[in-house]
Image (cartoon, rainbow, N blue to C red; front, side):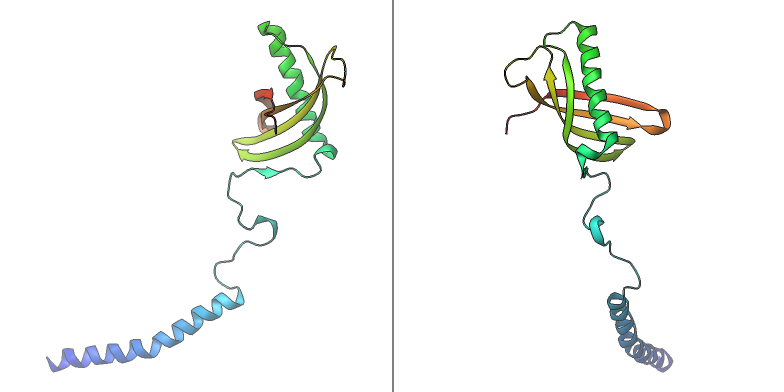
Length: 150
């Protein structure tokens, strides 16, 4: 019994001596940046798979080409489906967001002109969603609809 009590006392002394050193080391790791690193810069707080704004939309050739594609695809579907509404002529993409999915999903705000439109040029604003899978050389228009009024 005395031997077990002696072992417990020795263990308590060792733990008491080591605990302050471990706490100091943990504090130093947090202050010096060692250990787990926190994200910095523009990636702070960004979630994996979250939408991100595309900067300089009007100067981004890829985004403008996707807007042109979305209008052409809308016109093709209109022609094949015989649905109502007039053909559109692509104007420009004025806003875009990008999301990493199994590929890249683009949320586009597209300005287009209705062919034969009169008055203010017949400009209308549409929301389009396009998925791009570069490794398959694939682009798919998921939605194309008039933008909700602000």
